[in-house]
Image 1 (cartoon, rainbow, N blue to C red):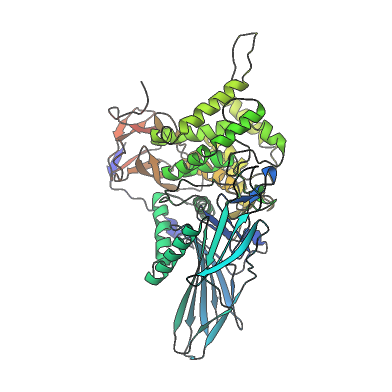
Image 2: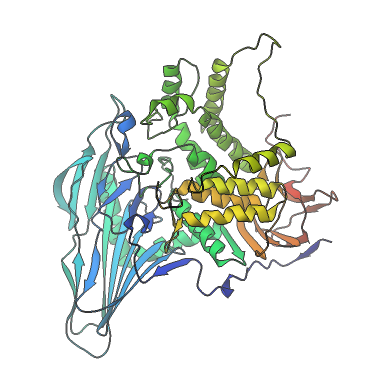
Length: 619
């Protein structure tokens, strides 16, 4: 039976003892690699670190290319005289990390964030509040090891700008001979050694801003904007508003496992932090590396290079909700066409050969030649992302004005030029057999021989395989193994379960997120529809996924053990088309009406256009 009614999408996550969006602790992790990264798609920094990184800014030629270290003036720790109670909190609702200190005389809060809307800005705010009736001055110390130097960029001091310190420099070595060396400008609010609450004050607040940009004009304009935001009191509210806007577009929450719920939220938060603002119009996104913008220095975290991980592991979970952010990944690949052409020519082939490891140009920058030569599946990974986007959006402009067609034709030319003719049967072959028996055999054969300390994303893919075969408990057993890769208390992933390998391992987070978004739901992005086949494991009573974006419309899904509820949101885009729900077993077709819930017993089906709707596909 199918029921209609008002939507009720409030999963009972309030039953959890703590807000699953807030990660807090009284003590910082002993391994500083697992401090939370703060990023916004352009700037990335791990709190209390001496260095930060900027998207698209690399130093070194070829295999020595790595994210250039940029000194971070916000590397400041707040200290009070005398004993104090410390609390450290990452609020993923707002993307703000806060260190709170409390004593009998005062409370101090230090807040750090990479601005989610104005992405050239990073911010430190300090609030000092008097406790009790004392009227004595209260002083806190600002301790920092910051120096305006980098091993990758030769910085020169510049005249102060409106009270802000200013340095500028160029990276030492271009990515390839004749390539450009990016310029970096830093302007920041100077930090005093102490801050004092005067006797007549009950509280005081200070704001320190840092601007990083590739040009003087952009740096000064953003510093001006930061000063204006401070003056109007809109510095933090504009940042929080941008994060709120992102979370309204997508959430994935479960009832029944607080551990799983927090893991999903952490994965989504750190992945979103690696992508540009949804308001960004620059088309200058530098891609997503396995460790994100906060990591990737010389010899660390894969040097900050862009792998196929971006297109296969991280992209699908973002594309399901954010077509604009998905398009930014495709635009990154379009921007590397000339480099991909150079890679193919060096191999003696036509077309485009996307690199195993990429920086800005698209030329191969893998430190070991064998991988760049032999790992050719990345061409398929890149084009699959383009196909995924087209099926989800039918945005043909990405392939015309956006030059996506050049990517597809270029990869096709590469495959054709590599193909060899089989004279025996006079055919070209692409062999494969993926029937049910073969899939079961593969899963049962590879699971026991998979390194238990190996890359985090492996278990997520095994889980999806078992869920597709209807084996929810086997899938959950494998997904549970991923928790070993989550290094508390800030839900930062390591590549391997023993804490080694890349840190803030977005590849593993992407695989884990896919296991839920495409495993539990059975979502499959197909040419004519968004198919689904839901299945929840024992212990998970509800899965709520809000903001699934399909053909310009947004849907909220609530999955329970025996039923599914879908609500089509009120249309915000004139480009959206009329959709219908089609249930597989009965063939029942139900038009989806904005604002009206459709509830039905759990079974497979799909969401597709109404028969009369416009199609972008040629006849």
